[in-house]
Length: 587
Image (cartoon, rainbow, N blue to C red; front, side):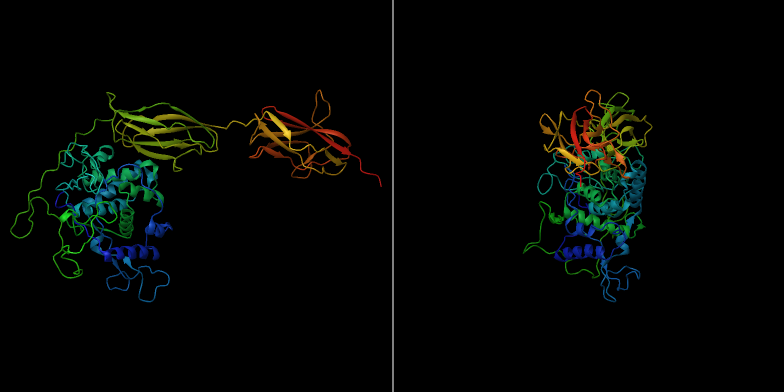
């Protein structure tokens, strides 16, 4: 691993305590950035419950910077006078607040790369709501902002930033996938660049963020745009705390990593400023130095043991000393009369991918689902060259067009998916709403002048349940005295092949007693409408979950005799029930 991979702080017990105080203080004080995320305090303590996406983490589980934002109290001379205080704070003793102008500084080119990535994704995937401060937080944790901004004018690091060999000892076990093209290692992969992509991940997610026609993981513009695209994958909305946590855990599935990134994310949201390239504040120690610095809680991590040589800076925090300095650019002086070491050339990036000439449909172009159900098929397209070869790493935007309440997974109308090695991008699952009708799912390639691909989509009404039998649930004769109500309710059961059927539509009609051609009756028993007037036809009745239907109260007018009530299902099953009305008893 390169000696200048970025200095990282070995966390001691005091640092762990500060981390806990930092997160508690930020949430308690409602510092800017915590508004609108009421569960963040709980998440800081134990996570939101969001799980990492399946598969290898984007950085291969490499070690990361564990430094946390600095803290001060509002009553300190260097604290801002208008810092918020938490409830119950005593006078002159506000909560701990993240501050420190040096740590808020982000190297100019690095900061520009983050903001440019945010602007690009705001155009190509506006539903993601990616804030550049999230990229800054990950860049801080993964590489100390490209080793304090040690990049050239085009944004490429002076020397490659390489993680440890991913040989399964403490980290993921990933056999070489790039022939050493990016990481110089032909045995195993290593995380590469300021955003620490493993080569196999970069193959699918790599982007050209600075428009030079090359996707280079050691270029901060390329790496920042690739990281943003990865965080936005799967239709995520990063303004949603659960989606935000899921995205960060996809980078590195560690709760400690999640808390560290969120700490810097909230810190940067309260204010940052630009500093010259090379003038950033990289972390103190590189985990490659003597094998130290692996973050706690990760496999293969180290801990302080009796007899171990202590850190020469332990116990000297706050005392004057020589500041850490980022690596000087090529051609500069390393200090004193010693010339700076010659930087090594970065590995030759792979040949730029062939241009995409079309998005081609894969499978069906017609999609159908019943209201409230999930579509069995998802739209899919393949990005290909003019000769028909697939192209990986192409962003494809799927959008629902038309009047419909159908949505992609996550309840969104738009989602961006990146093509895999086979050039195919599969849209997230579609769930039909309650509204029936036709609409379109449109696939486009943002930023590319390619014809759109449309998928004709239809939501149909669910089939009407039918029954082969309607039967009363009791045998009691239904009686009433003229001018009164029937004493017993009428309840029926709908079955099909002997099994109860829920949701069977039933129409109830009072009919004449003509057995040959019965018609709707105009006299005799009746139901009451909402206005209290007699109704002799009721529609829209349905059996319940157990296949039962109990009719509304039935009333008798002044007519006496035997009357009939006909119950009919939508598929034509009929039940006729006799209704007996007798004259009132004399005297």
